[in-house]
Figure 1: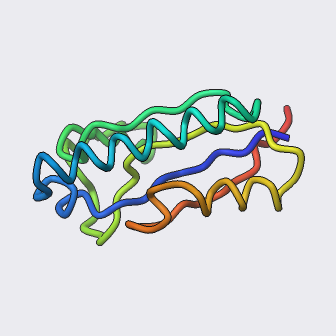
Figure 2 (figure 1 turned 45 degrees about the horizontal axis):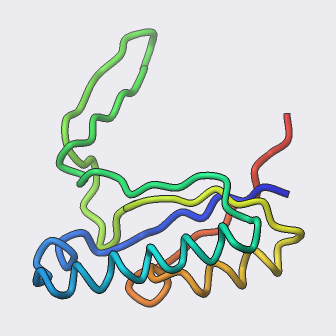
Length: 115
């Protein structure tokens, strides 16, 4: 079954980290991604640009409105994702717990709806 791992992080803390801290973090993500590939789970994944680059579109009464930048101030932002194919929820949760984002923020695990 496919699961989406949504990585929620404190974007400001990440932006304020040192070059050395960023290098360690990227190394941890590279190792995590490689482990998922070797286990045959990895389908896709990528980090997202900062929320300052986001654009939100809403349609109300047939009219669309566009808002540039983040819409809500929250402690953690969606910072990236992984799409994995795991045998069951317990396996997906185990991989989520291993993700570097789990110790710096949160990893939301959501099954993909078959259509």
